[in-house]
Length: 264
Image (cartoon, rainbow, N blue to C red; front, top):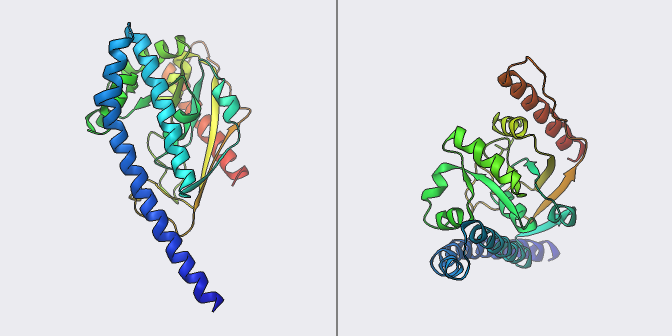
């Protein structure tokens, strides 16, 4: 009897989380359209200056994502363990590097950090649900590598925190972490202080290999924490920048691999 009741409970729990996931992601899309059509135009009418408008838009995104994360926690889709959120919220002018196991990693980071900028894949600028949010918040496109570097440097100089995922895309479950050189290139050329963030999602969900509706059999736990002793940036006179970038990229990759093993 107890076993049968347990099976019924698990089935109902799964169906509820599937319904809640569909509801939350629908609200996410609709919310993006509402911000684009109503909120951001009103802000532009009331706030003068492009930079002031971007700051207001980013703060709006920050609070909207906080609401979205609270919804996911309230509906029991995720349990969130955000250990260093107070410290992250106080950062200024930091290059924030994080691993990228799930679809909501950037959403969680932007919900914690009020003054955050981020590098966005070029194809998202044509997504009808979020392109207005991306453009109004002034997030940086990765379409043009030269323009990307200049935009990252300017953003950091303005005191923004710049979020970058060195993998360039979500981690493929079961495969080893592989970093692209973009993050190392930005770190070396901009010479900004670096903060590293470790993200774990257990059981694995919302990965590159899964659709949003392929939810795990139990509630997932999203853990985010700062890591320490990040590899320092050092430039060697006479050494080509491309070689320095490759070397630092390997150092960052090894560092994150070790941190993931330590905190597994």
